[in-house]
Length: 248
Image 1 (cartoon, one colour):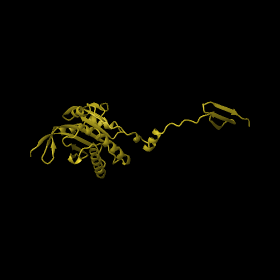
Image 2: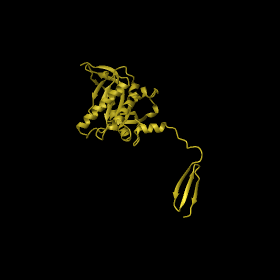
Image 3: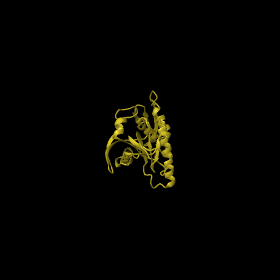
Image 4: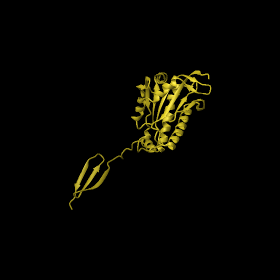
């Protein structure tokens, strides 16, 4: 078997706490994640059919075709995936809700004649995805649906230049130690959408934000309430209260 060497961007996605849900739920969330990731890839103008997609059991690894802009894997792909995860979770139950860790790296990947991939870049990707610092970042953000980890190389080529839609200040550097791998990574947690706040209806929130403040009517207004002690309380618009007592 002859292997070629080609520079490729690689993406990995792993479902948080997938174990213990039972086979029906696991199969459902695996299928849902694959569909959402495919949509996010295609929305990023990347040909899904040209990608090499490997099943990781509770996640997926995507090897992008040659020539793909690495910035597209950061934005809009990560944001597109997060938006779909939020939409899925609004209707999902405890067993079918999905939160994910994602990682991105790039390098010279060994490519087999039947599309197989191997090599150091895939090892680095796996260590990033499973790093304790990345796991902790998602666990410490229960309101979020995803965390993204970039290798130093990937961050240098996609985030540091400040491409449109990519904000360098959204990322923070963390130390990564996983088995024999020691390095650093740049992580970003997907911010929850405003309409995802508990108890908030998106239509109501939008209408409330867009509606102008209603000014009180001009001129004095009066409110009359019965008060104890056979009195009447009068409140006028400027906040002054007049209390008149009446004899029985």
